[in-house]
Image (cartoon, rainbow, N blue to C red; front, side, top):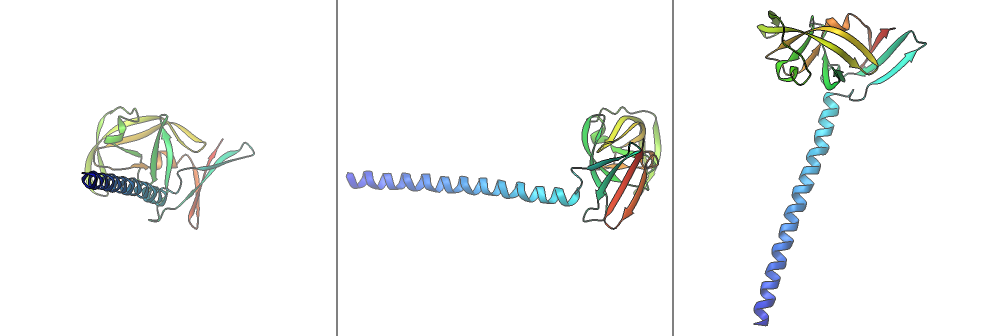
Amino acid sequence: MDQNKGSKHQSETKRIGTGMIVIAMIIGLGLLTQIFQNVLDEQYNPNQIVRTSQINNNFVEITLKRNRSGHYVSTGMINGSKTVFLLDTGATFVAVPQSQAQRLGLKKGRKIQISTANGRSTGYQTTINQLSIGEIHLYNIKAIITPNLEEILLGMSVLKQLEFTQRGNELTIRQFL
C-alpha cells in the first residue's frame, strides 16, 4: 500500500509539474507576443510620442520620423480621442473610416461621391471640432467619413494650414501662431 501511495504521489507531482510548465509556456508566449507587437507598432508608427517645440512664440514645430514603408504616421487626437494619422498630401480632406467616426464623435453630414485610389465611392461630409498632433491644434476641420478605409488620412484640409519641410527621413511641420 505504501508503494501505491508513493506511486500516486509521484503521478500527482508529475501532473502538477507538467501543468506548471504548460502555464509558464503560455505566459512566455503571451509576453513574447506583446514584445513583438510593440516592435511592429513602433515600426508602423515611430511617432507615438510627438516631439514639439515652440520658437519665440512665433510658431509651434513638430518633427515626425518616416516609418519603414516610407510614410509619415503619427499619433494625435480628434475631438479629445487618441488616434493615428497617415499624412496624405494627395487627400483633399481628412478622411476618417466609418468604423472610427462614431468613436471620434463625428456625425454624418451630406452624402457625396468621392474619388479614391480604389475608384469612386460614397462618403459623408463632417466637421472635426478639434484635431491635434503634439502641440499643434486646429479647429473646425472639414473631413469626410468613408466606408472603405482602414486608417485616418490627414489630408490637405489640415496640411494647407501648416508649413512642412522634409529632410532625409524626417518631416518638420510648423503652425504659425
